[in-house]
Amino acid sequence: MSIYLYLERNTFIHRLHPVTKIFLLLLFFILLLLFSSPLPIILVTFFLLLVSAFSRSISNLRKIWKLMFILFTFTIILWTIFLKNLNYALAMALRLNALIFTGLIFLSVTRIEEFTYGLNKLGLPFRVSFALTLAFRLVPSFILSAQTTIQAQKSRGLDLETGNLVQRIKKFIPLLIPILATSLRNAELLAIALECKGFGIKKKRTSYLDYKFGRNDFLTLLTIFLLYFLLLKIF
Amino acid sequence: MKEVFTMWKNTKMVVLTAICGAVYAAVLIPFKPIPLIPGFTEIRPASVLPVVFSLFFGPAGAWGSAFGNLIGDFFGTLGIGSIFGFFGNFLYGYLPCKVWSYLSPQTEPLINHPALWLKYIFTVLIASLGCAIPISWGIDWVGLIPFSVLANIIFLNNFFVSLILGPILLFTLYPRFKKWNLLYSQIGEITSEKTFLQNIGFIFILIGCFGGLLVGNLTSLGHFTGKIGINLIPLIFSLILGTILI
Picture 1 (tube, each protein chain N blue to C red):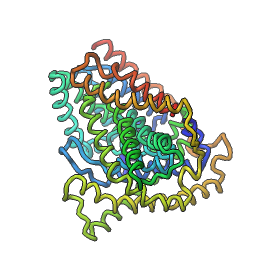
Picture 2: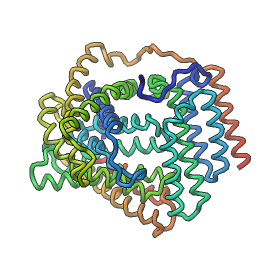
Picture 3: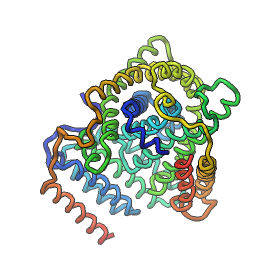
Picture 4: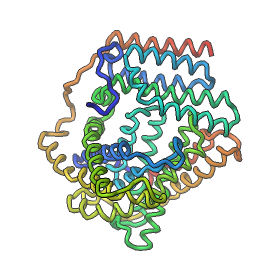
């Protein structure tokens, strides 16, 4: 089972070109930052709900609704204290949730490989995108290793929940040292293995993944620009 | 700062970047945070890792910290803040090695002497501020969370966790990583001479960090007129320029 939020579906949004998806993510971020009153942000959120329904990714919303609720509440409290303006506080809380929602949809419809492929196409050097992909790939095994270490130390009597601040921070030492040591032990072997397989020999690389920018990508981007135009015209 | 880009030619540095990023993300996720104020602020033991990675692996630690934070955001909190988080965590992983090598050229990152303790505290202080200020500036600028709340929380979290856990991790892991030929001093080139530009860079970093914290807090609390987004631009610029020069 994957620990990431990607949902395997065959929807129109899933099939979009990775670069289109990255552009959509950025365009929605910018769109949400253009408004400082609640109404346009609510409208964008409804549009995002539609996108989420089309991409059949609403189920992921259930995983993080508690986090969104906490962020929403605290954002309202903080901005009301600082600016004494409830309308602005509400707009900022809605904006924060809409931004997270945008990110959530992106993560639900985009594989890690697609994300790095898209970054490659946008000019990110191969070695950088390789390191990013490798990091994503290693996370599940390192989490497993971290959880094993935590369980092993807890079974030996390590109590992480009691003690003052300094004592509680210090209790993480018997956990962090084995995790770091085991994770980095094979770094040199991995580097040698990569070089043995010709890593970085040729500057121009071929890729197993190949996506074509098609009519759907064009229509989707056109729809978003139409949304920009309408919202800017109305508000 | 050229090593930040030239390091990508070295396969071992590429691998170290990936591992640092993965470990940072992996420790962020299962280590349940210890809440100070539930739902509001917590202690993150993973905050020590960018400092430790930086002192061990140099620029690979910086890129790894930035990647690790981005990967952490892929678990549900990807947003506009991730862009500022990437930049802030890059500085958090880059400033320690630069400030440490500026203050203690050719010195191993082992804190076994009172003078080195002082240098380590100062290094962590600068790194924590260098992380907190750009992130909080960006988040406040886009109107999500007030600067004075976020900057102080990030700064204090990073500073205290790195101060308590950092020296122990450095002391325990240094001999192993040295034996495994993983240290940046064994892979890359470290210059020991301080140049005029480095001195200027260090001053710019100090202005950016301490000035940023002061001006940001005073503006956020209403003692200065204007907006955080505008008031802090010269100080953020000073921090970036200093980081390039040092």
